Image 1 (cartoon, protein in one colour):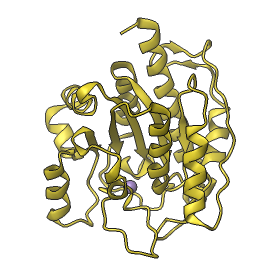
Image 2: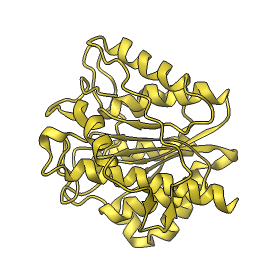
Image 3: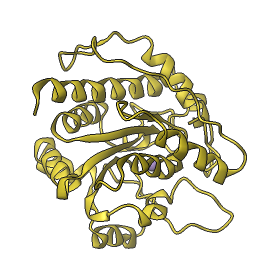
Length: 276
Ligand SMILES: [Mn+2]
């Protein structure tokens, strides 16, 4: 999804998909860290969705493209700015015929701002999805951006969102945090959509993004978390957003995004092969 018209400042993530794909092409088909072979997995590159200057048409194209994917494929959606998660989730829902969906998000931001008509923003997709998402099955991990009033935290938690700041996670440890997150996201038998905003990860590992994060999650924590979720929960799709190559250093952020995809796929293979 080469689309960044909803970035409020410092655009560039329209070039994310191309760089992430070229980073992926340098990887072998064996996830050494998790000891999982992807030899028997087909990776189908479906091409770019048409991004136009009409936001509505671009979002509608994203939704339609995902909805039209064959059922045997597990969508991995490359952003683009985080606003693409709204049409991407709608497209995945179109594939599900009403089956329940949970959502686990890695992000520094709530993205729950009230939309202002005519001022499109990547920071309100969580709110615009209110007609299709059950917030009692939403988990937001890594929220720490120092731009919010307490009202945002209160509103999210009152709606049923499980919010885990980096400090919350460090206090209980990742094993407990992930078990809790998966229980929350898979309530009522829901499958899980995973959305990774790369700015949920610390700027030391992910400098190439519109809003670099000071004090964010560590790279290996998110690599392991995405793997563990894919092993232990039925996953419906993964998206990775806000990777901005023009703001990156030596492609380190797009290479991290490629590793996240590798770990996700390894988790899916591990779950499929173990039958758990
Ligand atoms: Mn963010």
